[in-house]
Image (tube, rainbow, N blue to C red):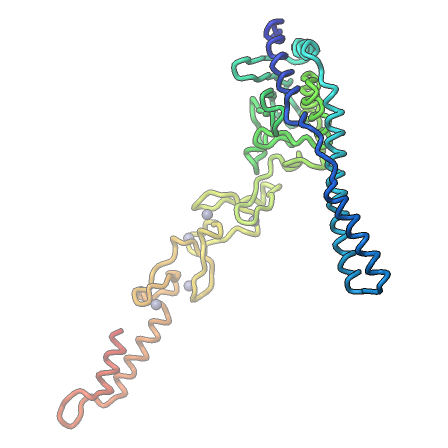
Length: 345
Ligand SMILES: [Zn+2]
Ligand SMILES: [Zn+2]
Ligand SMILES: [Zn+2]
Ligand SMILES: [Zn+2]
Ligand SMILES: [Zn+2]
């Protein structure tokens, strides 16, 4: 798709205007005179303390002086950065050169679209393949209004093949449509701020076409590996990959919990231990003790009662047997009444 002359011209006029007035063209900050004066005053105080032998005062003044010197040099450093930036931006292309750059895009990229309404320029890459993994074509969309701000462009996968463990990573260096520029950061920034739009798109394409093993969002070797839901480790080997029968999340070998009743595998959220025998079970395979309402495995429950509750009942019943049933008047003894009450609980 060729970029028409008038479209390129109109876009270039806008881009030039934005870059020439961008916030980075602000005035250079003033010299840190206040800090400088404070340094001089503290130096005089330090000299006075030295002459009179005031050890403690001298220590205090020197510590304060150190702090003010640090503040002063940090201001000078900012000033230096600002000057570097300003000198760099003086190299801003003129309107005509930006327009020429925009027209040259069609010779370099397959599909180029300049959208005057949305103030964006989009190009498409060839299909990207890195170490035999296919990532498809990418569309790079630059919003020229955002160039002076952060994140002026997006990198959109047109036939996404995201990493198994991170669906928003569509390329080792692209996450949530944002490119990790790595070492190319300054070059990209300079190209954008100087209006070298063709260079900008070429730099982005270059990063997309190359794999930097030092700082990928997901390594190429791990592209198909999925993440364990419980420990977040990557599961690289299919043989070590399990799935919770309840929530269907992926689990590594170490995090998979086996239910001793139904025999299925579960995650930590959907499994538990029987408090009596301590074996692992899924939440559905445990049953409730009718007396204490605790959850136990079916093997540990007898007539819907857990061993502890069963023991308590037995002891209470034994206690009833141990007491004399009735006193001389034929009335239930007090001990017997208490024992009955305990057995009834
Ligand atoms: Zn795990
Ligand atoms: Zn689960
Ligand atoms: Zn189970
Ligand atoms: Zn049990
Ligand atoms: Zn119980």
